[in-house]
Image (cartoon, rainbow, N blue to C red):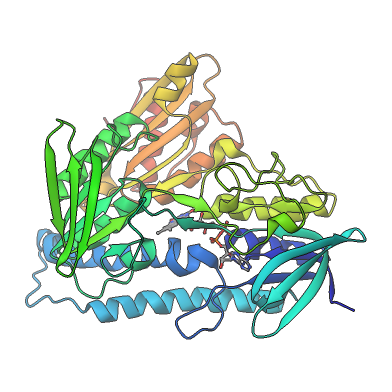
Length: 475
Ligand code: FAD
């Protein structure tokens, strides 16, 4: 008889491994199947996020930021660095070690929580007797059976039509995190989160970086006051960003890549680069899952169709994370994983999509939660806005990093916070207070009255809250 489980999770990224742990905590007999292979062919739990996404990109952003600081900014602090050099192999090795720590951490967590792990590809076989048969194809092949299935198979980088990734010259996020020597000229297609983060890494390490963006607006999903401030900062750092371009033929030769494009003024241009990163979005991944075997519903883009509770069209089959609708963010995947495990246990798992924070880990960082000014205007929602620049924040001055601002938007009548938008130092950390405030449905006055440590960057959030009522104390 095949092995029976209460819950089988397919995919060991942040959506899947967290769902498996939570389901196990709730008393279920849980299996998780993940096929990711490390360079030696072994398992590497954690999915895109841990292996070629969130974690390695942040490791490289940190290393490159230190290099940039040492090259250009230590001198402002009276620290002179002579003979500064770069060991890319060591930097990449450190990044790989950070990834491995995270892979190993999940193995430990599975052992601790008694989750049975299969390093294998999973595919649906059939629905049978109120359960689902799942083929597990790894070093051995077997079929296991689960009452509940949680699909968390993630997403893949989208290639430009006719221009496949070779990960040598034409790079997805995977190759972009493994470039062995700093390219003299680097092209990036797409100025979204990944394009900006990867472009920043290699710019800081010395590459001449040009980003080509098809849309006419920079960071169109971001509050435009914040986006403009970020654009100014990136341009000053030397990132060349061309908006409103139409990319044409891409030639991948021995000496590099040439990209033909038409710019916003309708002029034909060619960009010659050593390497090209293509970051034009990601597509839901169901490769090899065999959803047809059980009639699992996909939409026209290949994402698994789910309702607000992550239920698919099949009883007891759930799907979470990048493979379903909604923002492709690790913490959204994790929260959906927890909520689904709790729903299976008869509890009321819940994900509040209005308070999912977004972060771009550039320098300055960009972070936001809730609605932006453009969205409120379009919705005809009456609001008050308060902004506070880091230029007027003592801690930011001491850090030597005064770019940017905190912007708070609150309901004109009730003062409830509707959104907070930050561009500046450690925006990724500052946003947590704002997420919590919105979860508790705080007013801007609540934040304005809370004691914030001095000197701290968080005082800029308090001052932005004071600015909503036009009563800043330090500006
Ligand atoms: P994934 O992490 O993609 O995991 C899916 C797993 O399922 C993989 O291990 C895959 O091998 C496995 N799998 C797929 N099919 C099968 C099968 N049939 N059988 C067995 N296993 C299978 N998000 C953030 O929130 N913050 C960030 O800073 C951030 N930075 C990013 C940087 C980059 C460069 C990239 C590319 C992404 C970044 N993201 C970030 C997005 C984040 O990585 C994803 O949102 C997140 O990984 C989605 O989690 P998931 O569990 O849905 O899928």
